[in-house]
Length: 415
Figure 1 (tube, rainbow, N blue to C red):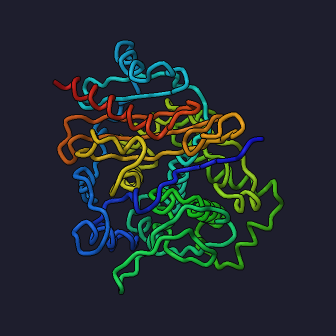
Figure 2: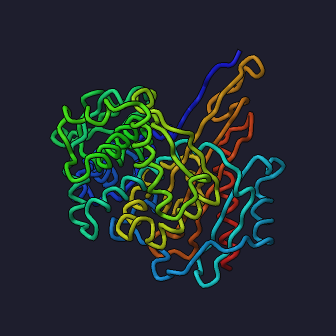
Figure 3: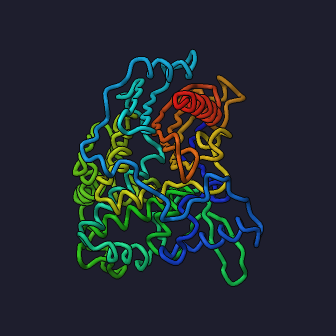
């Protein structure tokens, strides 16, 4: 009998993995940033940030903006062998791409099983954010202030699209200077930037589905967006096939417009059963090579545009205690820009000890990371995309261990 222990991921509790630089609360309207800033200063209870998490908003830089012709190089066989050796006996169950741009004049690329397609889990939220930023840029081309204003001033209220999700998100009570953390509920209201932050930093599937709904509304109503709730029926009461087509136009086509292969990289559906019940989608998939190409476009400032690329990188910036790949102690002084995803399932009759991140039916763990070490003045800058399906093994620990070994390899390459 199969017991479904599926963790479609980022079980990234906000207490352990908020992202986004902490100096941007006023500019973005993401209220939790002020609370995390106060916690880091010791003014309220909360975890202190590791040294690599202290960059401010303006210190988040794109590393390839002056290299318009840069493309992903051919894999270096010797570098690839050294990376694959780190994976051990189960290397065949991993896919890994590593791009070293510490010296952009002499980049090094390693790739192992780079075109193996796997469901991306919460890494798909990177594609969702890209699609939203593209739609906003389409609405206000060449007007960054208007793009920021839409993110900051558009209210979003949770409805049945968010059901069901156990991930908690932080609510900051500025008057009493304290946090509460709980799953989103129908009726919770915050601005669009906050919902996008909750989707990326807390990996809330509920928040991601709320953002996806807004993406559809923005795509459908164009200059009339945002619309009153009663007008939303003009979209969501359309025939099911039309709703599906609108979702895919809004969610998948922007990835293709940015020069990425949607047969190798796409988020195709809502993250919650409530969203999927209202709008059917298609399957989601990713490969490490195409994820790497997305990160390269971002670093070039060519993912939508330079402002959107930098905004996505800020949304990926990790602050507070780190988990999975990013929890490697070797990365303590590094700025880490990170998203992970997990999906696992257990057959307890075959293995009663099967558990979280140790699935024996399937055990997917996916990581995308940009490491800049040390933060602020990096000597090593490298990009990693990684997927795995190693059964009966704690995949979170495995990714952490690989991160440590890879970082030592990258440091050695700079000596």
